[in-house]
Amino acid sequence: MDAASLDRAGSLPLPELYDRVRHHVPTIEWPALAGDVTAIQALKRERNAVVLAHNYQAPEIFHTVADIVGDSLALAREAARTDADVIVVAGVHFMAETAKILNPTKTVLIPDLAAGCSLADSITAADVRALRRRHPGVPVVTYVNTSAAVKAESDLCCTSGNAKAVVESLGAKRVLMIPDEYLAQNVQAELPGIEILTWAGHCEVHERFTAADIREAREAYPGVTVLAHPECPPGVVAEADFSGSTAAMQDYVETRRPAQVVLITECAMADNLAVRNPDVAFVKPCNLCPHMKRISLQKIRRSLEGLTHEVTVPDDLIAPARRAVERMLAVRA
Image (cartoon, rainbow, N blue to C red; front, side, top):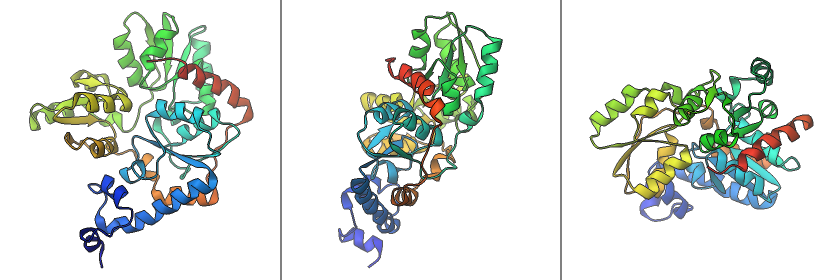
């Protein structure tokens, strides 16, 4: 009996989980994926492990094996609280490093070492030291999308969800905000009384969106609500109805219930929100993050089976990087 026949007969494996992802995973592919899901669930119990999944992960990960889901801020907060022995990060490398910084005695795994980030690659610890020499006394706010070495050189971190609050918390007239130039410019627009110095780093997904994309979406879908991530260029944010982190976008959709919405961000976000919001029509301008998409159910399974690939942070970076992250976690947006 083929997969379609099994579905009609109600005999697909893990039917409750498949119901969550049936609009994104073809029926014929599910039996193979269900084998990985079953194995991952058993391995999590055996290893006392949890899977942290970012909002940009594929639905078959996000809705079937993830124990904790959310944006970078939510994952950092939950990583600090978990009592698991093993943490598998279904995300990109800087997220796994952040989990390790907050849990130095635990095993932190990333299923694919090549899952990187253009923002994290755009700046080094040496760059931060040079910026401090150029702007003595100016506090450094570092986006969480950075390496542990860069975090260790910073005063405190921020995410797109609390960036404005973090900058305000310093009480300074000038602030260095690195490395995302567009996020810094968008925060600057909200805080005209503070001079924000920037670095020319960009997210390879969000920098591709343009204001023309939004105007075309409005023309094609009259009345559509447009939500843009603050890593987008300021011209894109200015054209949107709302700008916020992926968590803020989720809150907007779930509380305001727009009839039709377009999310100007990585397109897996719309797939994941659509599962829990079937009454909302999602228009998807699909820009994929190639790094997030390196993570798969099969790689998560292999990671738990062999405890690979373990993420480590040098001992001399743990304390200063942790201080910067914990100062971020203490700020409430």
